[in-house]
Length: 102
Image 1 (cartoon, rainbow, N blue to C red):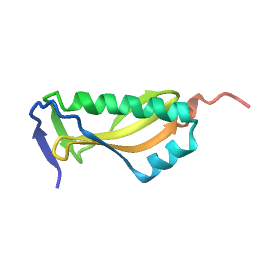
Image 2 (image 1 turned 120 degrees about the vertical axis):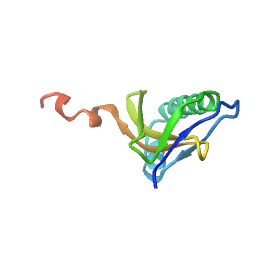
Image 3 (image 1 turned 60 degrees about the horizontal axis):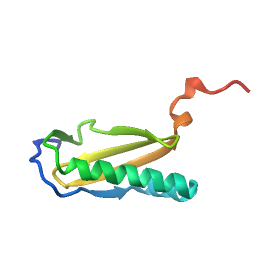
């Protein structure tokens, strides 16, 4: 069942969870890039707790962030108070029509 909820503002940061493919991608990337991605996601998690927003859990609510040459797909759940990272892929993998000719 899909849920639509009006979140109440709070000063508590949301937890950040990485799914299996996102965890594997972080392990394989350069350490400085992984640190930059984690830092940005934790910044978003801190802000998420202080905003009142309408969140549709399970209703196409996937958000995308491009940082350090990677596209991060994630979902923010006000109900669970979690930022769940679904995937992390190189930015060029997200734009198949823009690859350089061989």
